[in-house]
Length: 476
Ligand SMILES: Nc1ncnc2c1ncn2[C@@H]1O[C@H](COP(=O)(O)OP(=O)(O)OP(=O)(O)O)[C@@H](O)[C@H]1O
Ligand SMILES: [Mg+2]
Image (tube, rainbow, N blue to C red; front, side):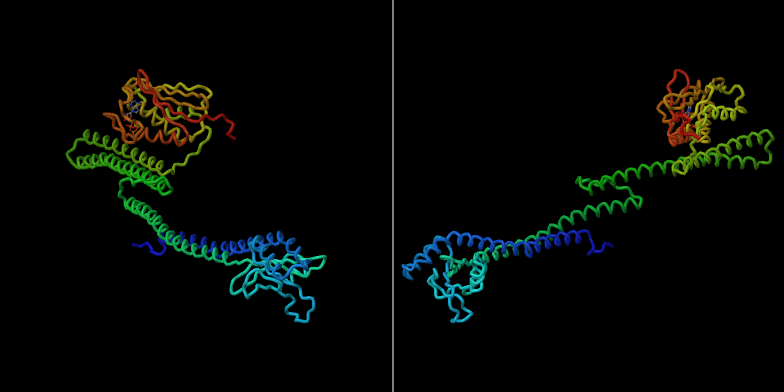
């Protein structure tokens, strides 16, 4: 197959699904999780701050008490720490700096019975220096701590700093749990995206391929069964349109083949007949009268061929849309008079007589003069051809509701029953025409935004050409 595999719709869609999923999960991993972690830490510290504020006065109360022993102080601070749910390290501010500038604080008490004490001198210094709560983080024995340092004052002197500590391990645990789960979810989502994307794309690609194969068949001239429309999505719509297009093409194809077959048949008959007469004329012993008769018949056939050639050319031009129409204000009565006069040479009795009943002033229509004359010629020709001798043909014109009308009525036998006289090559019995006149007339009328109607009459037939009337406003 000529389809490049890597660029196939299936691969593209599967990769797209995969890419989108990967991007979404990476954003979660890189942006959302760290944010969550820092939020959790901040929340922990805010909580610790609240606890510190709550315990401030109780601790400050202990500062001025000379009367309580170190054990008692330990006990009281521990009970405060228990109710606060945090470890409290009470630091005293070194009054003399002899012990060294690195250790400005000494531990008064710590609420855990552990040798190691979580000191955070920098934080304590910050709190003591500013006289306000300071937040920070520390570590003890490899354990991360969230810490708040609170300066305590007694009688205007702030000699103590309370350091509240809480482990941040649970935050890390929570975050690493989320990370792990997210990794698992990522793996599952990527797999699903790949499989899902591939599956969806596979189904789409199958339907597209079916359409492609159908189109190839039609392009090769083979009409196929309508493709199944199995969903209402865009591809379903495309399939439906494809089916309609195929049907339309099939109709056009059938019509074209019919047309060519009928046209060549119509052309063949007079040509064979002419060939036959040429053979007969070669006979030297032919008497003059017969020869003249043959030549007259041949002239008739040639005339028929000429008319047929012109009609076929007209039809093919109409089909190709290459008929140029120049619409202008045209007086229908005047054209009808001119066309009728063309028939005068053949209108000798016993042929039907043409009577004009055209009002003065004329009826103005917007149309192409030459093409309207052609339509009227076709209608009058029919009225003279398909009617008995010594009858009357009447041509009338009029106008109503923005429509200009021209009617050719005869006293003939009426239209043959159940015959679509406007179809190409449709003729009644015992007629010698090709059956193209009315087909051309009706198409020309439609091109000029008009139409041709037949009217049922007790006697004869009436064809009415209707065209948009010209009210003179749009003219120069
Ligand atoms: N005025 C009419 N009276 C009775 N029958 C008519 C009349 N006009 C048309 N028809 C019928 O309609 C058929 C189709 O007419 P149309 O003009 O298309 O073809 P045609 O006259 O047979 O041949 P063509 O016009 O191509 O030489 C005619 O064969 C005839 O049977
Ligand atoms: Mg005709």
